[in-house]
Amino acid sequence: KLSGSDAFCPLGGGNCGDVLNSDYAFIFGVSLPLLGLIAYGFVTTLSLQLSAKNLPFGINETTGRLLLLGSTTSMATASAYFLYILSTKFAGTSCSYCLVSALLSFSLFFISLKDVGLQEVQKVVGLQVCIASLVFATLSTSYSNLPSAPSSQANIDLPYFTTEITKESSPFALSLARHLHSIGAKMYGAFWCSHCLEQKEMFGREAAKLLDYIECFPDGYKTGTKMIKACADANLEGFPTWVINGQNSLYSHISIYDYAIFQVLSGEMELEKLAEVSGFQFNE
Image (cartoon, rainbow, N blue to C red; front, side, top):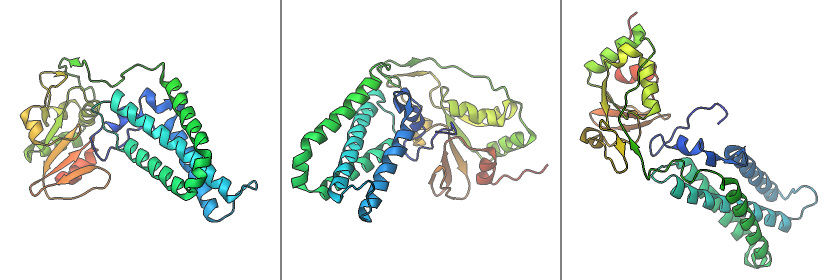
């Protein structure tokens, strides 16, 4: 978030950034990653102090466990609200980080609930309801003035368009593009995909024309439009996706699905990485 770069989505392609960079990623102007850092940090610190029986400010163990339960209650309530936002405002969009955070929040809540015990919980159930209601009201107020569906796909009708590549190709990019073409490497993309455009800009104007680029929506995109058969057969999970002939290998920082004959690389790739994977060696 601090670097301003796109978050890599292990699952579901490149849609995580659509959620993490949306207006819903802020509460009254405060970034959710910062709030998450504070919440998880507080719960971690309090849990460690409880386990060491070394609570500050003279807090006894029972009070500490109730404080932990109140914190995890607020986190679980917020996660439930965010899941509602994800399913209604970002229909069809995946966010693996959101789902992992929700799983962690609910797990922490049930663990702290079990740790406190049923009798103690019954004494403070009213307070827990108040905490959950306060979190719900705060989030609802923060999001009340936002657009109803920033990423809604309800009425999308996007005509096909082309974007000019402005950067001049380097000798390395030209040679790499010729090599990728010669081995039958294919780049799958969509005309509206900013990462696809950035990938072409990496190659430059002349080299991009040499790539075997497959447009998955050549007739534009409307709600319900399906990708052309070539893209559907490639089982794409995001744009751009490279299919490169060569030996199988695995890189932990990108999505690569290994097959017996070819590799599938999802996401925008540095030219040096494409050269490495495709076996290209540049002779100046």
